[in-house]
Length: 306
Image (cartoon, rainbow, N blue to C red; front, side):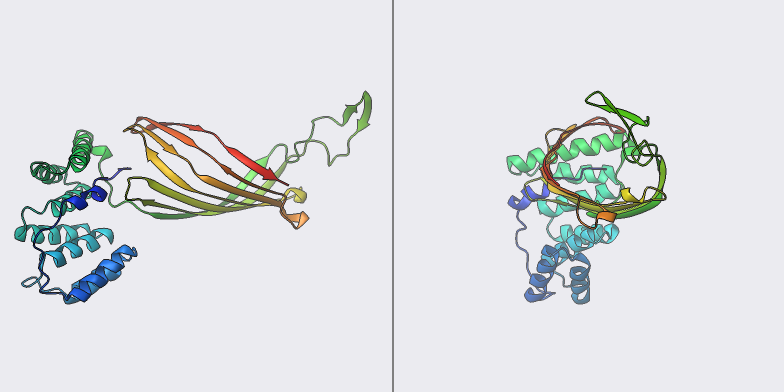
């Protein structure tokens, strides 16, 4: 699924009551929390597991183990830790919400819905209740359309590299005639100035990152570098770099808006210096007509220098 449960940021109001710390030391728990805040779940999980004793572990320790395992992608283990914590604190709404997400990510939709309904019955704050209702609707939609069900934890980082060949029918954007008229006078163009067809080798590489902010905004960043080399028209060999970063807002279940800041720079390799640079903003309005059909409306405003 493209969207996971957005309520956890608002769930701070659902406190974990009476969480003793008798197994892992308070210093170890604080260190694990710091590692989780630094997006190092594997290290936090290793630290907690080294000190873990199921017979003496506190609810807080089990909760942190569940969070670390979830963020590390070890969903089955995360489920086990959360269930163990709930055996000690059945009314801990925050733990049930985390368990609901883990169950959802594993495709256990009925169990996930059961946990959500249980928390909703605890009369949580209004904002949390609204988020729970939204997640229940999402679970119900996934149950009605199993093919659109969850596919595991969302990836925050991605990278790619591609290479290939491309054919350009008019590399130099020249006219298809050998004569042009300026002020009524004919001028004969050289072959290099006329329409030129050529084939180029290209390579592109890039990286993407996204992070869910506490206020529900998704912040996306990307950068890519490309290089093209023409076999004959070497004067048009280019190197380009593009980067963007900015927030994405969910306006409704079907409508989203992203507003990235962009930077674009290009050079013709034979010139030995940058040909153009631009800074700007590129808003995109996205409409999901169906899960498999989306429409985009793009706009770009930039200041370009040569």
